[in-house]
Image (cartoon, rainbow, N blue to C red; front, top):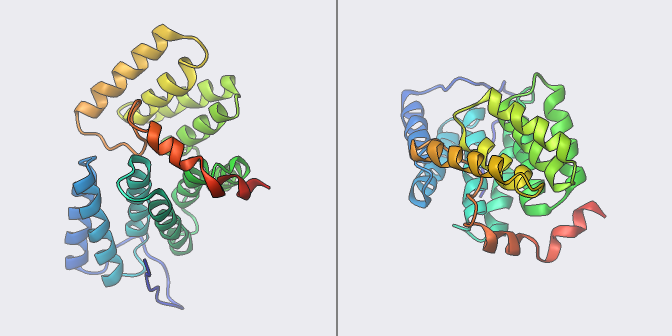
Length: 231
């Protein structure tokens, strides 16, 4: 995926043409469907927006998010999806250096694809240095703490993420599957996973695979090149 960026111009958070805006909104609607077909349509739309308006950072951010979900669900070969996500997130960082989201997405890529915990932690530090904690970054920090066995931190950050965005299903599935279940809090785990199901039923976008659906994906992400990045 090659995306041309105009040089010596100022990045913008506002879109410059009605045509690009229409395509961008269409992409957001497709992405919210949480389906393979919707994600593929969203990717195509966000790429069209960047072709029309190469300085529109939100299109790059959403393109990166779409590829994260595609890679997590195995709808493309993992290396292709996550490398395209990385490219889009790095573009978004260049277009909007003050945004936390590109760093958060890069942290997700380090965790889900690279298994590079130090790289994920570094990206999160950079994100949080740019402003107050927001829901997605706090949730990713919770998942990183759980991966490192820092259960108290994982719980505190997970609850903070839910408080910041109580309608997002990812907070509940992370608390249930990655914090409560591994630490033996089965009642709390069941309650959280039921809340996840309730939120998902209302069509709220999720960037993480649901429990029981990603075992093959985790096995693929654990192969080969993953361990090299933290050496």
